[in-house]
Image (spheres, one colour):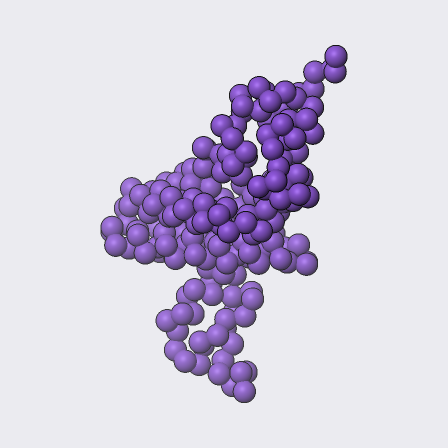
Length: 206
């Protein structure tokens, strides 16, 4: 009989992501995941309802972290600065699990059905973030717009972080992306932002 090993949930997640990336999400079975993690199928189902829940767990740490950061951010902050603060605080949720996050993203990118599920998850994050901003004191329309803009900026920053050969911190990408949004309504001579969020004039585009 094999010796008991700790962190069954962590080993199951790691095993599942490895198999999903190696042979595809649809082709991978719960039995294969459990075997790779050296546990029984029954142990798998104690931690996950099905293999999809490995990618989309019931808990939503991003939404929870954004809500907490919005409520504890220093005052006063303009809406976009409040959003930037909350998003930067949430970066650690992903940076602490960087290897697993990158593996998860590769699985989702390869499966259209999972991409739809990811979009639905992000929509739920937007709703939770908007509620947190509302509770912080922002007017309802401002809170809704700030949450939408914030999560859109986060999505762009996250994709840049995943693809960044220089492996810059996610927080850096978030800051640069949020800074770039401030140029969307800037005068024409400052209509283009560089990767670091700074302004490039029209003359530089010639």
